Structure formats: C-alpha cells, structure tokens
Length: 235
Image (cartoon, rainbow, N blue to C red; front, side):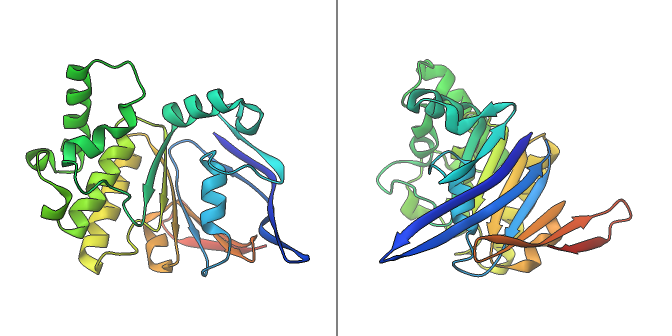
C-alpha cells in the first residue's frame, strides 16, 4: 500500500547539510500497525510529515496505492490527504473555543457535504471513540485523554485508509495511554493502517512491526511473527 523509496530530507544548517531522513526505503502493507521509534532528533516526525504529504523530500519518492504523491499538484495533493490520511498529533491541535463536535467537523469545512450529513459523520466518529455524549462540550471541560480522543475522531471524519499519529500518548498518563492504544487496535481491526511515531519502546507491543530510526536512518526493524514473538533485524 505504501512504498517508501530511497527517501531523503536534508536541511542546511550554517555551512553543513543535516539529514533529517537519510535514504530510507520501506514497504508498509494495507491494514498494518507500524510503530516508528527512536530518540528525539532521529527523524521520526520528519518521516511522518513526508508520509502525509506535508513536507516535500529532497529526493526519493512515496507511492501510496499506486499514487506517487510528490508528483501531484498542490490541489491534487490536498485531495489525496483528504481522501487517504488522518492526522493525530501529540499536542492535539484542537480549537479551545469550539465544541467537541465543531472540532471534529473542521476537516469537512472545505467540502460540499451537506450539514446534516456532516453531523451524522461527526456522531459516527465520536461514537467510535466513546465521546458521542460529549459532543457539545468545550475543550476546557475535557480531560487530556478525552481531548486526544477528540483528535482521533477528527482524524476519522473523512474515513481515511491511513492514520498517521505523532507521539499521540506523549502528554498522557499510563492508563490513558493504554486506552488510546486500544482505540488504535480497534481502528486496525476495522481496516485502517496505523503508522505511529513514539519514543517509548513499550508501545511496540501493540504493533505488527516497528522501525527504529537513528540520525535519519533505519537501524533496526522488528517483526511480530505468526507465533506471536518478535524477531529483530539490525540494518
């Protein structure tokens, strides 16, 4: 479903080139849960923004469902993101003065979907994360875990095939983090592909595979085999 081919993203820092992502190649299959792990500055978040079409690579390509996303025009890329990608961020990126329902509806603001259908989609998304009964609440009335669930519901409003999550449990306590991971497992069971960035190796237990980055390069790949045990492959 997703082919990453010799992907590189470099920045200029003074007189030096800094490789945030350095010649990465990988394949992610449909309906997989992938964790991308590594220390701060390893390139995890940069890789996620490249996968989501939010940042253009210096070289290489990303092909999703036979679509070479960086050969698309700006308009086509926006359409691709709307149809294929749901984003979940560590900082939630919710609008405090809007209600839960209004936050979830934000991705539909640029669509031609009728208001009644939008409300139905919002209710469906909020039901999937257990917050349909709080759709009229303001963000300040919710806990951190509930706000993250709102962010997940917003990511689901377009029924995307792929969920990209950047440190979604980074600001949450252990029990709330486990509840969020359970939601991701349920999304995978419903047919979604999940790519989650995390610095916490404990969360790899929830995924089918993990990819470890260091200095923008893949240094280890770990697979869950059919017996339920993990096999590690150093790169």
